[in-house]
Image (cartoon, rainbow, N blue to C red; front, side, top):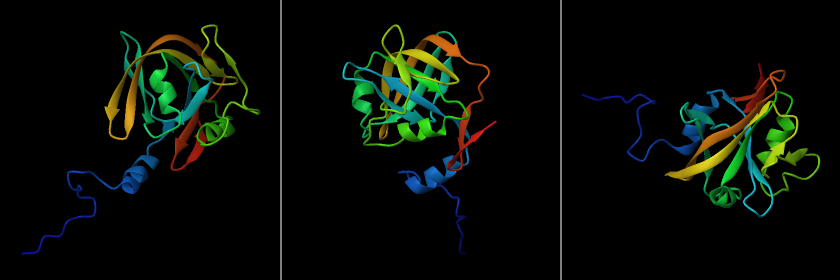
Length: 170
């Protein structure tokens, strides 16, 4: 008897191919944020769609960052960070912070520092100021777990979303 295995059958123990993994998650809509920090060597930041709330008490969030990115060594040394919730009109900001090899904080990026010193982007729909608690190894990434210690929200702005390889708004 010949058994036909459907194309969606689980792969070997190593998991599915990276392209297939990306393809699956392209179908999952996600909010777009830019995580910024300064560990004493100037501001750094990166675009992320991996932000998740973890706990209400204490207020914890997590985000993923690749260990081969230029931003990781800075996040690894930082005590604090800011999650910038991008507004629907901020696609250029998302693209800037997703581009490697450039000064992401150079003009036309508009930003300032919070009173505690963290870099925060102007014109965002809101932000969370975080105290980083730990970075958990997860394959070629780290899952950063952080406590939310301050927040600001502009309820007039719609969020920027990412779905199927492009940006959208509500």
